[in-house]
Structure formats: C-alpha cells, structure tokens
Image: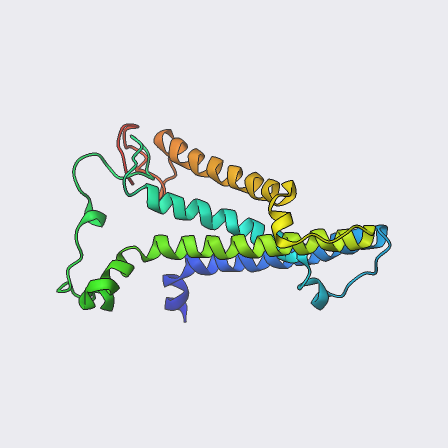
Amino acid sequence: MKKFFYHNSLSIVFLLLFIGAFIGQIFFGIEEYNKGLLENGGHAVTMSNYLTTGHFIEATFENWESEFLQMALLVWLTIFLKQKGSSESKGFDGDEEVDREPSPNRKGAPWPVKKGGVWLWLYKNSLTISLFLLFFASFVLHFYGSLKDENTANVLKGNPQLSLVDYLGESRFWFESFQNWQSEFLSVFAIIVLSIFLRQKGSSQSKPVDAPHSETGE
C-alpha cells in the first residue's frame, strides 16, 4: 500500500483536493441557491434536490468546460507551435522523443501500438481526442444547467420560459463561457512565459535552475 501511494501520490493529492473543493462548492452553493429562492418567494431545497438543479449543474460544468478546453488546446498546439525558452515547449533542434513513430517491438508497448491500423491512429491522438470530448460534454451540460437555472428564475418572476434555441441567443450563457475561457488562456500564457525566466527546483514543469533563459523544454 505504501508503494502504491508513493507511485501515485501526485494524482491522489489532486484527487483529494478536488473532492475537498467539490464538497465546499456544494456546501456553499446550496446556501447561495436557497438564499436566492427565498428572496424571490420560492422554497428552499434539500441537498439531494440541489444536486439536480440548474444552479449546481451550470456552476460545475462551466468550470470543467474551460479546464478541459485549455488542456486540450495546450496538448494539441504544442505539437507544432513553440516558445523559445519555455519549459512548456518542445525544442527547436530537430525531432524529440515524443515525435518518433511508435514501434510495436518496444518492450511494454500498449496493445494499440501492437495492433496497428485505426487503433494505432486513435491511440496516437487519444489524449487530445479525450480532452476535446470532455470539453464538448462539459459544454453541453453547462448549457443545459444554465438554461435550467435561467428558467427557474423565470418561473419565480412569472416570466415565460426559454427554449433551447432561444437561450443560444442569450448573453448569460456566452458570458459564463468566455469569462472562464479567458482566465484559462491567461493562466496557460502565464506558465509558458514565466517558465522562460523563473524556476522551481525539483518540479517537472520547470527547467533546471542553472539553465539559461534561452534553453527550450524541460
């Protein structure tokens, strides 16, 4: 068990941080949601009911959507775009290990590599494909939750409910999306540029402390 935690400590810590933050979101989210309901003449909901509300669905997937989008774009764009001096970029001197064609004869090669054909093609692009699929799924669920939350507010105010098509033209959904997208793009820009000049000893996301600013790659 000790060996398992040692080999998986990075993912375990981030999973625990996610769970803790998610619980915090739910705890404070239901308080905020019920406060709004009571102020507008509605009735407070229970925890189980809150988890099916548009407020919870929208708040959750609005953030997941932007995270998966920035990761998908970073993985894909670093295939052919570079930044001199950044640890997040490939170098400029020829191909790197990640560029070589996979060999089915390599010891421990995953089964799609040995299978070849369409399975190999899918596996060669599986990280980007998976991240974009997670983005699109989160985008759809964000839209659904946002629409549901908007129509809940419309019911409380006595206004007509909006259809899917109508809501696509509303500013709220697109404001929610772009305000998250811009923050994710800024954070990626920051790590790309800051890693040119700044260091963190021991981190895989940093260049060696004594590396010159012009050195590109980790």
